[in-house]
Length: 260
Image 1 (cartoon, rainbow, N blue to C red):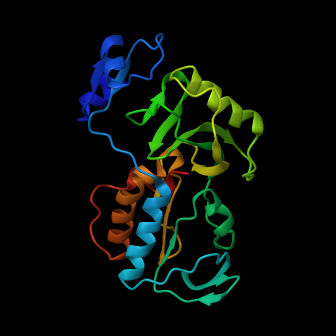
Image 2 (cartoon, helix red, strand yellow):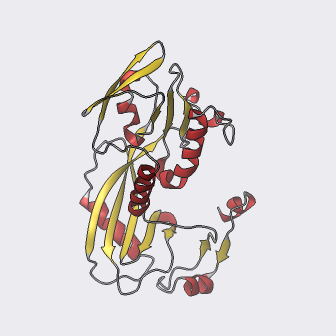
């Protein structure tokens, strides 16, 4: 994996056991190596989204929270109204970016959006006595560990097909168990939050971004699976270019809805 990413310009450093334990002292003795992506960063998504909402409001946008979209009206291949639980909206252009719920939101539009919900789990605990120095993903377990100041978060799991956000307690416990296979943790952790969320996945694992066929004023941006936060800023740039009739930063045909 490191060799493949390195060939495509992602800086990596292969760590043997000694180097890994120097980099991350709380790793258990039987953790014998790792890959350090030296250019990577991480963030707290809740803080990022709060600051993003603040910024767009400062720029003059209106944000309508808790306003579920219930349907659309269209005439001659153009959306004329967006119906919501709080009333109707008219817009020059509509962007459909509803994640795992995109097919449900778009049901009035007869769009073919083969998006499946994929449930993932998150457990946040109070900072243990020894915190990791870095955010990392645990090998074959594919569990992410993220230190957020006074909090430590474990995320993982991929359950495709259900629109339920009710977490399975068994899998919440397994997340902690998997983390204990790799790093030192306090005997008892103080759990602050535990939940499940839905990721939007496409059949080929690639997002769907582009103008919707048959609707002149609809742009779709969904299907980002487990990397929505990572791909969000770039997707925002592409959507802005599409809406404003500009040339996109790269060819979007591989992401087109026509491939389904």
